[in-house]
Image (cartoon, rainbow, N blue to C red; front, side):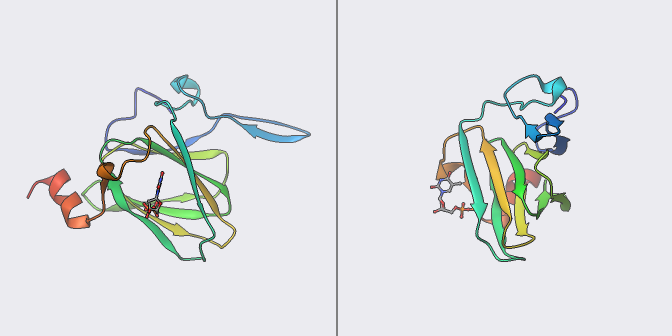
Length: 145
Ligand code: TYD
């Protein structure tokens, strides 16, 4: 992730630094080294979503302060990201690609198949007070009443 180009409220798809050789691949996400593809935050939490049928929706919330990086470790997930001006869809379908989400963004995750595993690295511990789960409340927050 390039620190010169990422700003609050943005979603950025980026290549995760990966070392491949005849044994396979190894991808690394660590804090810092943003010019080299590192994370622009300290990961304090990992959670992962799996066991959803194809087409299943999850997410449907915005975080107020938590910065997150989504990675499809296996399978495919489509992520609709809305900054208040309308959705943009990102397809996550490889483990060497990350989607960085800077608050405040509405997100909807759509699972591509039942084997998909979507990992999320977050800058904060879980806090329900960091969630906006009502789309109209989100719209009001980002665009004004
Ligand atoms: P939920 O926010 O509904 O998942 P998503 O919106 O990403 O599809 O979370 C499901 C449940 O898990 C909910 O009861 C809150 C709980 N949860 C935690 O306890 N800790 C966490 O870090 C997360 C992400 C969720």
